[in-house]
Image (cartoon, rainbow, N blue to C red; front, top):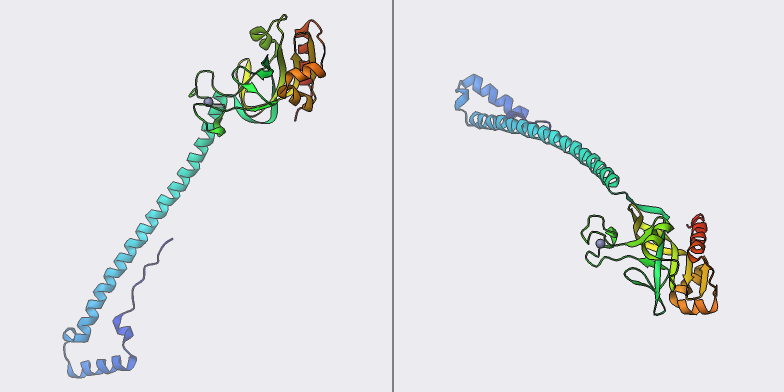
Length: 262
Ligand SMILES: [Zn+2]
């Protein structure tokens, strides 16, 4: 915004025409020196101030112009900062393959059957869905953390990409009293070489293995009952255990992996 320099009108403009004409006539007739007239001295003083005011207005206009230049530069900086922020996000996403997954990511998990509860690596699962927390840094928007602030392994619900890698690590053919499941992970899902860490996970297919009984299901209610009271389900809703156990589990969970879990 610029201000057009303006100056007040001449003092003599403010003198009524008849007064000005009468004064001019008297000055001409009686010859008194123009610059000794009090009215004229006042007019000169006013003119000096008009000049000063015009100069100040010019300076204000110049300052306004410079302010506009700086404003324009700042707008440019703002656009630059936004572009750089977007570049930084892309760089982070490239370095840390993770995303807020709009569709569930599927993975495999194991739970030990212990004291009539299904126990994950760290915690008891009371229901088929589990929301991760971080003991060190509880801000839920950032879980699972990816900057190792809460340890090298970090928080989140863990699952493997392949059923085989779950077996290699944790379970043998002769093992009993455990559950293996296919989980649908949502929220922030961080990908690692063999698996994932997610904000939350829900079991969508389950193999519950007792001593000599088994339950294979994809039924939501039955899965929920299995997490609530696994021994009851192994008593009432089970079938005799078939071997080889691990092949049956792999077949069950892998078939369900092809289903759209949305
Ligand atoms: Zn954490």
